[in-house]
Image 1 (tube, rainbow, N blue to C red):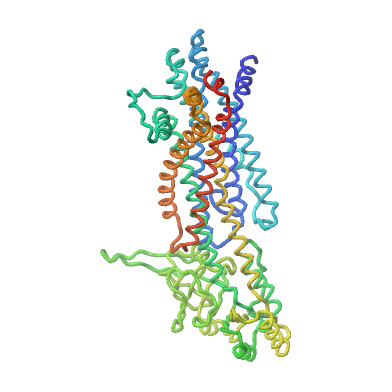
Image 2: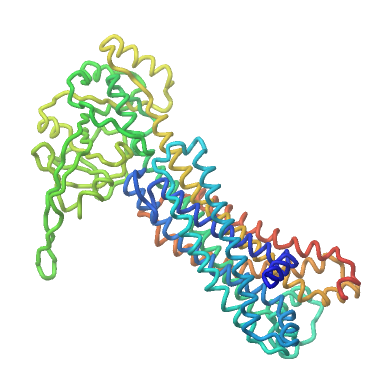
Length: 617
């Protein structure tokens, strides 16, 4: 009991070191746990399960980002823990030497410091789990995310606790073992205390760049700690580049896919019952359940040809998109591929089946512009189909070399598109072919694309007047709110992923501040003599600021390079990158770097105000 109390008292006595270690590891645990809980709530990523949201193609992009960010956060946690233990042991080597000088054996010292590491690890992992659960709970109660389709997987909390606890032990044991094996003489030496390396005789300084030379000399003398902090910050900048740069680009790209698939200058003309069902189909993208027992083939849902003709004659209407929407059983048709070298045939696909929303369209009159692998339907296509990405990933092996059977007729698949309607479980076919196959001649959904310069409210009133006169069971509604709802949710999800590394960024900033504190401690007397010879406090601040800038620039250069390469490797095909996108990414990364730099100056600002006699004592 006495030994345990002594360990706790020693940790409390070194409040600064202990606090930094606790906060850094706590934030790493919290960020990892929140990432996994957040992905499990959305049915995405490593902990996916239950009801998913978004189309399968967009979910795959999210899952790829989640996996890469999880690996990076764990890597940062490993480097961070090793760095913090090294700093703690470096600043206590003289104490260790004194303890060894009075006869304390190495195994007892090792046990003492390992007990400290266990206390810090258990406390920080517990606090990290609590903080991660609290942040997840707060986001779950946020109104924007009230439609989370899945409950959190709480078993992830003990898994993350154990993982980081083992991480702390593995990467914290080696520095302790190395320190306890030092001889008494080496442990008492300032060379070990400050992590200095033996240097050749320094050349005389000139007045030119004297401040910079002093700053760089200290970084070179302390190679071990400098290399460790550069490695840590480089890993953090890789994480920031991937999470911020990748998320911004992926956000703008996927939003353009969803926006262009429907368009915001579109008014839907449908039966009242069909209007409610279509809104459900459009909201399935964010987890809304769709009523399955709906009769799309009901003749009462038809939109008369007279109404279509009047819409085409209406001033302000640019295009009229006629659609026949049905929910049908579909069957995968297997095929084969031929190796061009050996001419061997390879079977492709199976005979899987399921239900999908089948939409007949006139290819030349559609109001949307889909992101498509392959191509979209053309005017001269006969019995061709473009399938949604969700169907492509769940029912087909190589969709572009396969076919699909709908109501007994076979359609060749010419493209795979991203469409939020029915969450990607949708198939587009030529309208005339679907009418022949289904024996339904009337359409049950009409999109009217309006001129952006036209008065929207006035045009809506004119359309409603036509419907009231021709068929009072039909209504016109603006689909822009539905599209915006999907876009807001998608944008918010990417924004959270972009902000996930904030905990890690704060941890890295605290590590950089701890490094600067060690630098100041090592140069305390040197700075005191400079002050005594007439140097102003701002000179000391400038020297340490240069050291911080050198470390940050070195880390930033390595991290941004590796992060950019990683981002390009995991990005989707044909990403949307504009000049504004690059400026936004650069602004976020600059703000992060500037914040780290300013935080690292807090110790030197406090030290510069210290009296000269206290500095050199």
